[in-house]
Image (cartoon, rainbow, N blue to C red; front, side, top):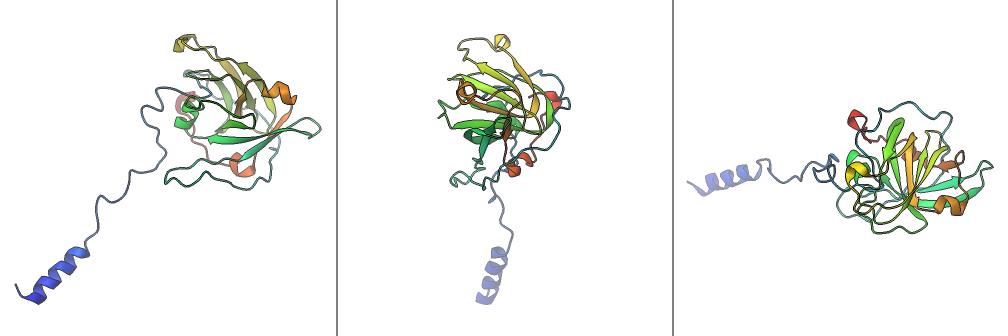
Length: 218
């Protein structure tokens, strides 16, 4: 083969599309492990089908967008929500990790060792509904707040840990809303938050396109 022909062949090979260079599709699909074991603020399977709940205009904050440091993965947002009484007095502010996919909502805080008083997790659903949470694999107790679509607190549970309790015997904590806020147990009492008060959620979070849970399972 002539030198010119050899050069042409090399160039042709270099122009071929590269294969096998892209990573695993980042579609947020939970792994088998994340949906079958250890959930954080703990949702239970077999919850009632979702029902409409919560009306009115959602109270939002103008909190700027913040993100976790870039790790090359789907970094979670860390916005801040405000807890307000009926007179709009701010009772507390909580920096939250967002859980808005099936896998994230299932895992919740079960792989977290502890929270600061100003930290929590906000579970975001695509629509309002009736759901049930459990304290599966939790290392610390929680206040579980169900929040309607308009930001109104509809239910507050003070949930202790249940070490060694079988899945089927875990205490169920039901409630209705489009959001569930989990904070350290006692936080609601310390701040004076009660049912009927408001959790002000940043608009960018409230408008997020959360992954719906199939089959009415939280």
